Length: 81
Length: 213
Image (cartoon, rainbow over all chains, first blue to last red; front, top):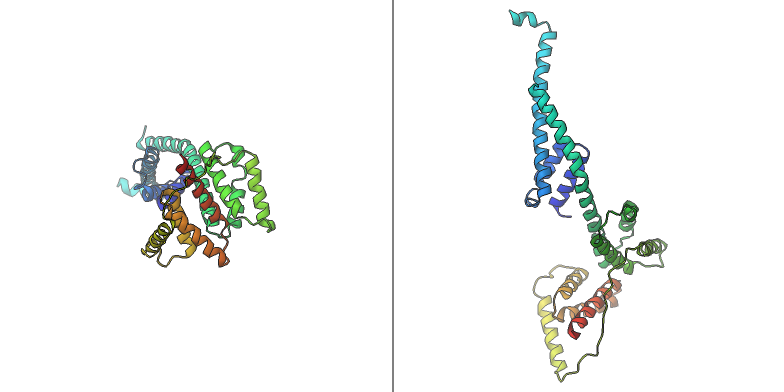
């Protein structure tokens, strides 16, 4: 099995294990050889989109945590001035 | 609906899509990988290497392959041909190899059978050719080919493997003749040559079939 084929296989394994970030990395390694494979492109692009969505969700959740900490720390009164 | 909720919904949708889409694709790739692994084992066997461990591992990983019915006819033919090649290289006097041979026979009985070719032989036409001159020419071409640099630093077994591949693909009888003399040389130096002999026989039968058409 060639290196890109191996990477594609690992990407599918990673997807099966719900390790989307790893899958996205493996898809990138394999993309040159499978550029014309429609199934590959759909899986690769949907995985990349999912990783981006997860990043965005993490960012929003991190922001809300900071706000909650400020309030629980007694900062609310100070913020209200 | 907040931005967070929209993203969460999108996340769930994409995850569902991927888990549904990955299974059929994985099955296809699994099938290809199974056949390719066996191809590699058959290649090693044809080079005279010890493949019992690899073959045992392949059988234990794919023990339920036939029951799963996930193989198409093309895969079955390939597996049958590879197992057939491996079978010829197994030494049945060794208990471990014998067990593997029996396993291969068992798969054959369960339908993993190589495609058979019908070979019709006719007597070759006699001609008035100057055979000695032809023989000298073929030796000369073989010598040039071997000295072309293509086989530099290569083991004779690997060179033989390459030459048999050329013999399988090309009409020029030089390759089969060269392979024959290499096999004879290896045999007289104590190497195991049965798998190569089988390949050469196949090449020769195909060539004769072409000549008789």
